[in-house]
Amino acid sequence: MSENILKDRRVLLIIGGGIAAYKCLELIRRLKERGAAVRAIMTKASHEFVTPLSVSSLTGDKVYTDLFSLTDEAEMGHIELSRDADLLVVAPATADIMAKMANGLANDLASTALLATDKKVLIAPAMNVRMWTHRATQRNFETLLADGVDFIGPNEGDMACGEYGPGRMAEPAEILAAIEAHFSELAYPGGGPLKGKRILITSGPTHEPIDPVRYLANRSSGKQGYAIAQAVARLGAETVLVSGPTILPDPPGVTVTRVETAREMLAACEAALPADIAICAAAVADWRVASDAEQKLKKAPGEQAPALALVENPDILATLSQMKGKRPALVVGFAAETEKVIEHATAKRQRKGCDWIVANDVSPATGVMGGDLNTVHLITREGQEDWPLLPKQAVAERLARRIADHFVTSKAAE
Ligand code: C5P
Image (cartoon, rainbow, N blue to C red):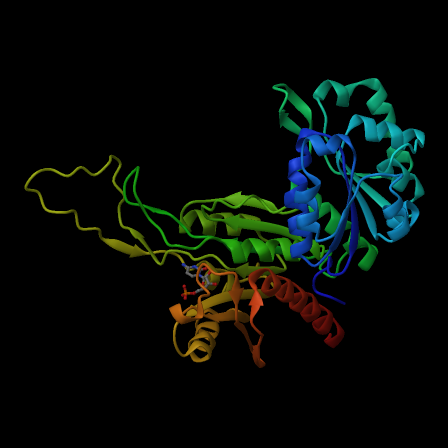
């Protein structure tokens, strides 16, 4: 089975006329990035919010807009359009589209495709809070649920119209996660291969205070760890992500604990135990300032620069690996090396006591640091696996699948 659940899946996206239509562009981009084929139908009203040119540039296909266009019908009839898709997604789903769907109306291409389909329909409502809470919309909502339509959102929050409440369209990342969950469910009926496993992941840098306003840190973005958290969650794992300070949004379906320092990260990891698997992808600061000042350090004319005394931070990977009783069954560490990658990573695996090390060459010539691609080697007790050059997302997916396979194999060996 493909590691990427969206690869070659055909999604028919129906874009309704709401201010949230702009978010569709991001959704299309993300679906395409993950290998899905996206076709779009735009309602007439949606043209007021986003142009067919933007949509077709991103889908790489023409945009279907008019039920009675002779060329459209000749190239791909409206029935075929909805039958050809693996999934129909309506985003934004306005009150009007929901009402049409609930009542079986078919007076434009969007509603006709929705009535003609025999595929799953996922809808992301977006409307003013009073329109959403209106009894008519709630009645339609109940009807559509009973008809087997899936919903994502609406979320609660500030609305473009200035009001607050439920009615905001779900974010593109949430819609994407719901689409992936649908295809995962099809691929793994009853749960993914990591269902029943609890996985703890560390990610990001740590910030070690010098005084109330300054800290020691590193350039870790957290991207690889977040991608791993998302990948294992997609395979059904109960996922806890302990993250240092990053600007990344919480991955959907993952419990996130945000910390600042290495000591907080260790405490959060210990609190998250027991876990079946621990993956330490964080770039934890090796040292912290021995005694961080309570007040901001001030410079005074003629005075020497303060000397910072450092003390060692706890090693979270080593602590988890060498734990008695609560040690996760599989502990995975990372090793970023600039020379003798395999030799150093192999020694690190033994020194820290973890089961696997994901080693990568981060010497400047590789462009791995800050880049989107990575070449990694998986070091296990049995030896070394050299993986090809892959996007970091794909490294995460491959690692998630490798972990799932490991548990299948070790269960079979019992
Ligand atoms: O010792 P080094 O930093 O090279 O080891 C890298 C591995 O150890 C990574 O998996 C990292 O998350 C983990 N680590 C840790 N706590 C530390 C230092 C590193 O968990 N204090």
